[in-house]
Image 1 (cartoon, one colour):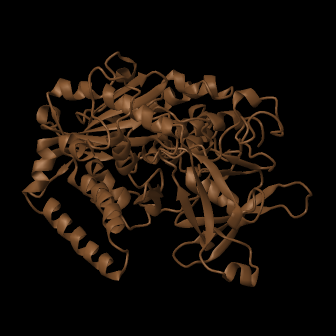
Image 2: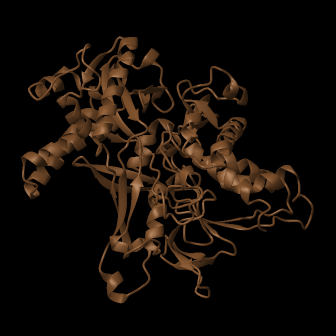
Image 3: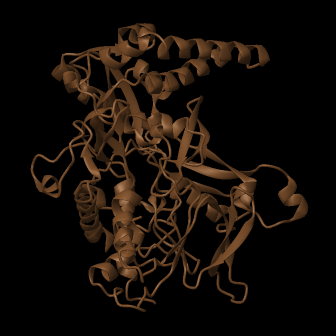
Length: 564
């Protein structure tokens, strides 16, 4: 959305397309896997239900993959829909600190922070930025004041009628299409003689890249797409170039299925997949001030311990989220104790439903919501990396020798959380540092709590004030592996060339893992760029959605004047 806005801005603000017969000097086809009617139901519009919308919504607004995390089956939601339709990131819209840009090449290191601030100002000006803790709209002036809210999120206040026809104020979630692009498109609609330069293909899935057969160079000439409702195929030809913006999971999947890389498709994989890793901690005591936030997050505090960066999120204990993840832990130990046969599967299904009834349809629900607070400790610069690969769904692809398409493959993700022991050590340091939250709210830790530590006491130790932070108790290592959670901030699978390799065009020296250069062009392929979280050269200290929009906005500005 930032890229499309960046293309429109110079022409609309300078009124260069307002004259009759004078149109835009470019045309863009947007292939969108999701629907046009984003947030078609109340659950998707309600930011407090972001988790359910991301993990349990079976509509075309979200695709749910799966992965094994320390022996636990985890759902991996991939957003679809115009402007992001799945609420995966709880609407958080945060600007990275300046220290996050040190590994970026120029001009991104200098220009991207400017684009981030500019887009935040546009969101605030359009009434699409609110403080998660209070629901109060954030103005442009608030962004530059010392007391800037620490939890800005994509939301806006609405006024409507309830069942008794009484006027009420509420807050609903919005996306980057509504906050950045829609206001400019409305300006275009004001000119009856001016048509939009954008051509939308909704409910359409990219299947593979097409290459120019008439040239010897490896040049992308278009893309083959499939209309999801009827399965029909269409080929879209690009006069200039193709830009992939499908995210850190789907973008490398499309590259792999299109034959970019070495080896056969089934043997290829995309490495260096990164994410933030979360470790929850539950304390007895109501959420701060008993107030109800619009997305369940009361405060976010960044902290640094030595070289490790953390976000400490103080949140309402949502029973739906707690049940979702705790059942994964129980399931792991259930099948480790019992053979994974049909009988144990049936018994587990019964037990899972009983747990669901106990938590969601009893007083336990209200006790968890209003009697406990969750501290989510997020390590935002982990050393561990994951990978993804493609697995054929059937053997028909090889049998009939047809061109491979995305629909013929499943994506297998190996998140790789805590595969580096240094990440467990870093989490322990952050765990000790997060004790100030317990002290500030005079809370008492109930999970993992003394019960968990007592069960593990014969294996290791517990916290001792005089003990060095670098000494990781055995119980903590076990707890971290059993309970670490994804933050769903996938990035790095098609990483940008680092500054140290700026003069290396072939990758023959230095870091040979980069995929795109500083112009977002894919190495070894002409007329193909990538502009999404997959190109991030390092983990950001905040959710990356706003930065991705800013990358598109900055890329559009560099393309103006180069070609028509």
